[in-house]
Image 1 (cartoon, helix red, strand yellow):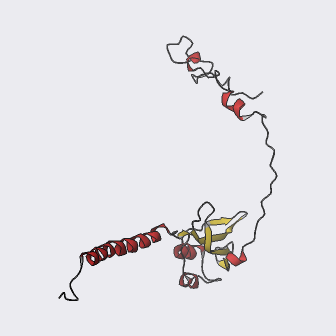
Image 2: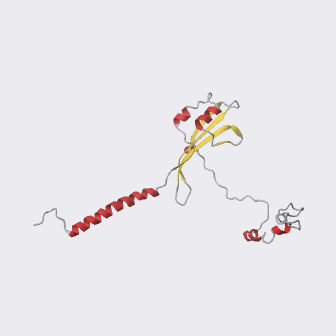
Length: 186
C-alpha cells in the first residue's frame, strides 16, 4: 500500500510546472511596473517651511535668493518681480505630458530690494490660452520647398576665389568663396 505522501509521476510533473509557472507569472506581472510612467519634477523644489522663512516687508532679494535660489524667470517689464515655477509631470503615450501638480510663486520687490508681496498660485489659478489658427505673413520669396532645395545648386564655387594669387583668394572678396554672389536677394 502506498502512503499518501508518495507522489505519482503525474503529480510530480504538475508540481514541476507549477514551480516554473508561478514564479514566471510573478516576475512578468512585476515587470509591468517597469513600464509605468515615472513622474518628473521640473523647476524649483520648495517646501512650505521654505516659504515660511520668506516674510513680506522684511526679506530682501538676497534672502530670497539664498532660500529659493535663482528665480525661474522675471516679469517681462519689471525686474523686481521674480517668478518661481514648479511642476510635476507624467509622460503620456503619444501626447503631451500630463501636469499632476503645478505651483508658481510670484514675488514683488520694492525698488529698495525689500519683498512687498508673495503670491502662491496653483493649477486652479491657471487660465486657458486659446491658440490662434491664423498665420503671420513673413517677408521674402514665395519659393516652394523644391525651389528652396535646388535654388543654390551650382551657385557656390570655392575655387572661383583663388584668382591666381597662389591659393590665398582674391582681394575682391577677402577669400570667402564666391563673394556672396549666390546669397543676394532679388
